[in-house]
Image (cartoon, rainbow, N blue to C red):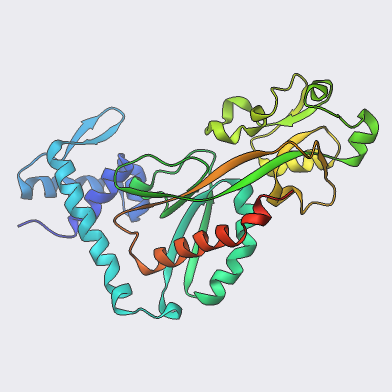
Length: 296
């Protein structure tokens, strides 16, 4: 008979694929992870991982155990939340992964309303340039501009938002106001660092123009917005951030770019009370704020 507790170590190593990251997540020494995996393989009389130079890879038997272990984990996590159904009693951490701009300029202030209803749920808002891997439990929920791809993910479109061209009054006085897309090539631009763009749809300026004169690049949307407000040039920003910044002026108001929003959750945790609460809040939020998100 195997030790049930060894499944916790198995799950984390399967997700992290390396001993050190798995050990950090479990708050133990990496030798402990290695020992517990070896004991589990001995007890089950199967090889669960192939040891490769770049990490641990599940064997066929390992994949079979992973599916069972994830179902067991989900059922275990659901026990308390199944027994307690009152909104104010829902508790625990929910990690939401999304992009920097929508996190800082839109979501953060709106979570105040969520926590008034669910005071015991702690939201951890994670911003990354790349898509978070939900299968490895890097986050519980993903909000992204492209639908994530992975096994057993529930992915649904949540809404859309629009972006427009913005600059500062000082820049436009100095360089003139462009009257057409063609005239934009005579202007300076603020843009992303091209080789650091991990998601092509984030490089949204290319939907309007491939600028010849880029005077400032940043992987941070916030830095781009501040650069535009300081008079460096013209750039493309979401309406939800730009229209709240009095330093910015809309350029070519007829030009707008649209991006979709997708919410993804792993099937094993989507029914947990705290996960359902936040996903429902997000879907309702994007529906209620549709006009705000799409009006410059």
